[in-house]
Length: 149
Image (spheres, rainbow, N blue to C red):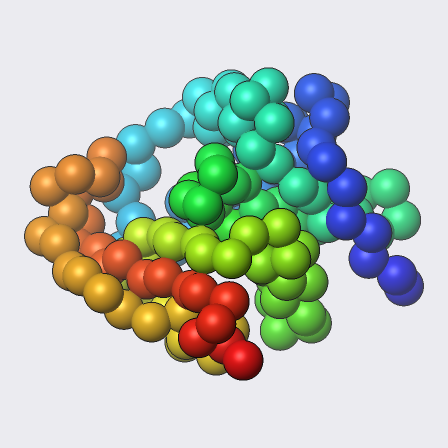
């Protein structure tokens, strides 16, 4: 089945919010701070701002990437969709639109760290988590087009 990338629409907020909520509730180390309704609202706000690209298969949103300029704010896939190139496809789209990208990833999310490192991101800073809502230690990673050549 072919995956299609497209700008998110208002009605995608429910599916994007469900994906993010499933990550939050299904990840043992992640604090449970928001209800599914709050998470859907958050995704709706990102969509309203024009930040979100969705990956869709057979009319169903299976992942999304939210980007505010050079800042990747979110990249999440529906459970069962990892390891199939969907995240790389979303990230490649963002890379094609910018010469530089940056993001923060939780230190506990080792799978995401490995993914971003494979995709040419390098760590530049670590924090104790005081600046994120979850208060979890995280790390900043960057990608530069010239670094990946």
